[in-house]
Length: 155
Length: 155
DNA sequence: AGAAGCGTTCAGTCTTGAATGAACGCTAAT
DNA sequence: ATTAGCGTTCATTCAAGACTGAACGCTTCT
Image (cartoon, rainbow over all chains, first blue to last red; front, top):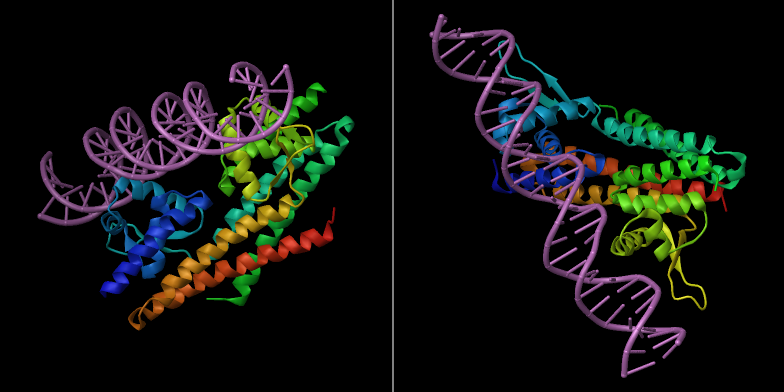
């Protein structure tokens, strides 16, 4: 592989490692995803461990969370016992769905607290309801954006 | 204050403490904002420290980050040396702006890496460009949402 | 049956960063 | 001039969770 490409690959992987912490993913999760995205090809379980220089235990745990989030797919090839991983079909949508989900949760919790307030705290109640509504709106907006993006940029 | 209200207030403050970690804010920052939002009124610096049961050092640091993010305002009243804090005029917009900004940063970094790739990595380049474009789109979408919300729900 | 390779699990280690609280500089009051 | 109250800073403490690596169960091959 070209020297420059190798450097850029390392740079991208490292960046993804810390950029996705904002999505609640650990550094290794981000690096795995970064590796798979950069290469665009599938990698075996052991490949990931040696390539990233991390323990197999870490690969096991982090690959699972990536799968649970819909960002990565696991598959097997006939006659090979190894697990292979590749970027999921709709990683962007999965990313948005994750944020949307957290917004929705926020909205529901705050809304629940607001509704449980007595009339003597009417002002606080409307204030929190507004806050809950805001998050619900953003949540819906994200889901909408995910659909629009899927339609506009089909694979 | 009503017993129920006090409980709900504590619940909301605690929730905000950990819900805003997703925005890169520390628990104390979230709790300060939660307190100000629930009460809707201004609180003094010392008030915050004693009310939340945290050190003044923590209030100093966390209040500043909230101000930097545009979520909280600091002001002074004549004849009183204390600093007072209240929720900013546009907290929702500030919240969205924060997410938007992080998306934009993501887009720019990834886009920069993509553009620096040689032709021999053309596929990776288009893949990463697409990824960068996605984040740029979401970033713009969030800013748009902030404006729409500000117009639709003026104070 | 034994060995080798696979992925998972879990107890222990290590790292990170949140929070503290003492020390400080500043201003206002006595 | 001294004291008291304010907010900031920084070295230190503490806690959360990321990561490791040995132990394990399972499957396949010899």
